[in-house]
Length: 449
Image 1 (spheres, rainbow, N blue to C red):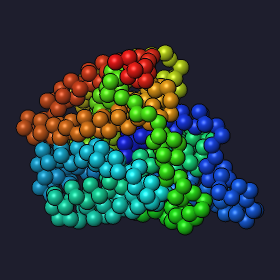
Image 2: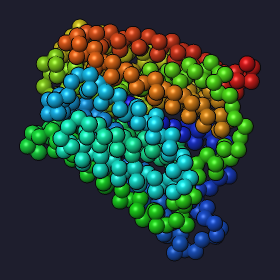
Image 3: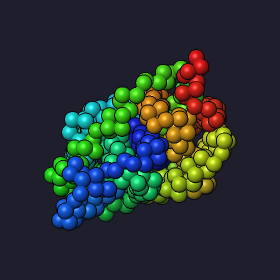
């Protein structure tokens, strides 16, 4: 996913945080008692421990909210199109909005964090998600629906970028375990929204507006743990927002990242896998419904695809780090995608569960991309710069794909041409994945040219 799930850029700092923590074992964040005053009195330590628990709750609840705005809409896309009089092309535009917002608003997150603190920005992001999800079903037209969706996606974008920063600042010695918990929560939120949106809509009277708006309650709940953290400024609510500057990365010599062929290969790989993921989240349920699969079952099939990322997000990075060349993994994931697309083309209903599983495996190119970001640079600053380049460029590359699927679907009247497009995009994804997986670093390539 989904795992895409991360993030502004979706989960942009995950690999760099791991590398930086390993290279700086002496760092201590708020959770380690690293307050300005050194030795802590027992009452203050107790307060700090309680605040740390709130941060854990905030991280997990926030991660749950990073994809339901997208997958809940995918499950009800037909009802939304009918209710708003939306054409297939406009629906394709709607499925292209998430990567656009992630590329545009995610860039703002580090600057906002330096000014207000990462916890404050994530808290505001959860509030923006809640407001956007609550308002968008009742705007009365497509422009208002798109604007409210953009508000929610803006909150997701800044949270995607900053939550790994919070993990590293509060849990410097447990970055791996906290990131694993964060990834599982993100995948759980993604798959749950896909699975239960349709039956929950039926339980609420069958109105698609209610089925979409109900997810605002989960986002509102994610605001609550952050509020006490914001009051505890001395415990790090401002300090953990300093991001790369606190790590000395802002003062590091700039790497000419665009001189690296591996960096470009990784950026294109990230963009093409994100394209496949957003096409899947936005359109796969509709493909099954058009093939005669009931709406509730189509939502469950999408959930199966999304939930595949929960176990594989742990397996794939561990396997990748043990291999000198990660290209074979990228090719294997691509082959699963090609088989899944062929099944959607030839027998979408009869083999639906198999195609959902195969496409779920294929979509796990996202954790592979994040892992390769961490392996293709030698230093923490290099990883951070490569991550920013690969993900910002990749999200821009991913914008046209879902829109083009909508246009092809509307003008051809079926799913044949869109599925051919998906196959055509998967082939170069496998090729650039092979190139990005070679055992070399961007620093070496940038210095050699």
